[in-house]
Structure formats: structure tokens, C-alpha cells
Image 1 (cartoon, one colour):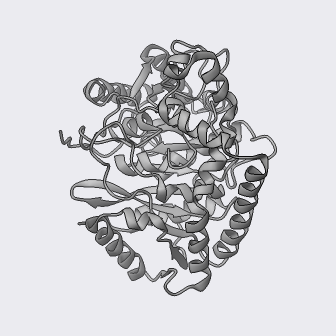
Image 2 (cartoon, rainbow, N blue to C red; image 1 turned 30 degrees about the vertical axis):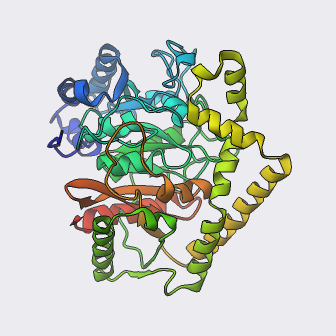
Length: 453
């Protein structure tokens, strides 16, 4: 069933009026809760909703705005939390029977930081099993016969419906950018390690990223920035450029278009829409080159094609704990087939194999850094086309997997429409240059017209 959706709600735009007495965080929350009531019976984005606690937090934020003392730019912002991220006041169930009803004793670092900044934690959103296995019940708000993408399924759907202006997600391969792309909202995956992952049930310590799905680039950035300001990431520090205000929009001089094997998965309409979009970008005076004109880009893509499958080896090998223990303790019926397949893959790998995959990643990170040093970023698709029909599979993760593999910051921007459905444009930047990439994303969303086919 096709839905007609309003523009997602931006807290950044609404909060600008709060201090002047035009609107309040409580009124904004009620707008979000009305959208939950209107849409969630059919969309099923939430696992748990705590409207009572959310109203209490929004009332406290309203009092602070009235006295001119909001705690932060996200004070009063309704935020949903993916259900692999710990919350002390709500269950964290991972879409797994093993964790049914489980209640953590503390918030994850990111949730704690957001609460300290005054954010209103509304509830927990649907995830695939442990963010990699069996899908949940969430449907795509644009067409309920289609997947919303995964594994941050509920987070993307909730933002797209206006249930919240922002939600936390995680990404091992494509689990923030892909659902954002399918649901027509913004996805932001910072540089690996830039945001504290304490209290998140991780799959792969060297691949997992905490990210944000939001109505706008500004909303995504401010949520990520407040997490970073509130809790430094161990051994890494802070999100580059994390301040009270988002980076100013900036037009890049040059972008490098990546094709990768994802291009072979796209349909003709998606190809035409993206080609037309690239032409629009060029018409703004930006130099967009690709493997066809740039030998270094061609060489990097050739290495990507040869080595990409090694990323799944890394993920599988790093999943052995705790998933082997789950399998031994609870049996195969309690652990989905996808997870069992990855454990089988891991058993075939030796310690030397794992070290070789790490070495390959380091080599490609250096090659990507050299290429990114002479441009404003890579530009490509965030997904291979509109969301596929059916809910059992969450779509191809090929396009967003490269930035995850190399730990690079990336945005999915809702700038394409193909046959009436959203398709995301992906921007990838230099490791640690998150604010620079955000400035480009700001320019892209405020300047580039929607390309359609």
C-alpha cells in the first residue's frame, strides 16, 4: 500500500522558535506522538514506546526554554533508540528470543550523553536480529509492501513518518545509510570510533559504527555532536568539528564518482536518475571525475572489487564472541540462519587469514586517503535502487559497505526519486573530516534539486 508522507519533522527548525515563545518541546513531542498513533499500527517502527516518561522530559525541557536556559541544541528533542542500544528504563531485546524482556542496568554511553543534554528518549525501534539476522515487522512508510531496509529498520521508518526528528542506528555494512536511503531521510555514519559504542551489542568491533538517522543534515549532525560532546570515545576522542552549531554549507571544488560492483545491481531507471543528478552537480561548477578519467580512482575500484568479500570475513571472525556462546548455550533454534552461516564462515578462517584481512583494510585505507586528499569526497548511490518488495530481505548492502569497511564518514541524502520512491545519494569523506563532509552534505541538500525518473 502506498502512503503519502509529509516532510519529516526537523527539531532544529522548530527549536529556533522555542526561546521566543513560539511553540514548546512538549507541543513538539505531542506532534510526534500523534504521528506514532496515526502511523505505527501499520508501519510497526517501535518495539517499546514510553510516552509518559517522554512527556515528563519534554515538560522539563519546556521549563528550561521558558527561563532561557536550554541545556544544549538537542534539549527537548524527541529521539528513538535502536533496540540493540541499552536503555536502563526500557527493555533492550535485539529482536532475539534470547534477550526477550531483558533490562540493562544502565544506559548506553550515547543514550546517557543525550539525556544529559536534555534529549527526550521516546522509545526503542525495531532492529533485525542482533542487527544482522532475521528481519523484524517494520514496513517501508512509502510502500508497506516493501522493506524499510535494515538493520536500523524502525529508526528510519519512524523518522520518515514524523514520529521523531532523529533516531539512533548502527552500521556494520549498510545498516544506517541503506534504510535512510529507502525511507527518504538523512543517514549519517561518522568516522569509525568517533562516537562511543559502549552499551551497544556489537557485531564487529572494527566495523561497527554508531550513527544517526534524521529529518535533515542539521538534525543528524546536532545529535551526533551532542553524543560526542557528552562522552569522548575511548582512544579516539571526539567527532571532528563537534560544536553547538552545524558546519556551514560549503560547495566542494571536486568530487570523485565511485561506481563499484553496486552499479551492476542497479536498474535502468535508477541509473538514469543518478546520471541526471551528477549532471546537475556538474552544472553547478563542480568537477566530477571517475575511474574513466582518473587512473588512481580506477585502481582503487579494482582493489575494492578484488577484496570486498574479505570485509565479510572480518565481520564473521569478530562475531565469534558472543555468538558462538549463544549457539552453544541456547541451540540453533534460538539463533537465526544468517548468524549461523557467518559463524560457519568464521570457523573456516585461521588467525593468519584474519591478520591478512586486517592488513588489506589498512592498505586500502591508505589508498583511499591519498585519493580523498585531492578531492572533496566520493559520491555514489547509497542503495542500488528503490526498496525491494517483501520484508524477509532488507536489500543489497553493496553501495554503503565500502565506507563501513574502511571506517570513513558517510551521508545518505534523500535527493533522488525513482518511480515515486526515494533513493539515497551517498557522500563519503576523509577519515576524521566529518565536519567537512557535513558542510558538503549541507550544500548538496540545500542547493541540488531532486532528480527524478
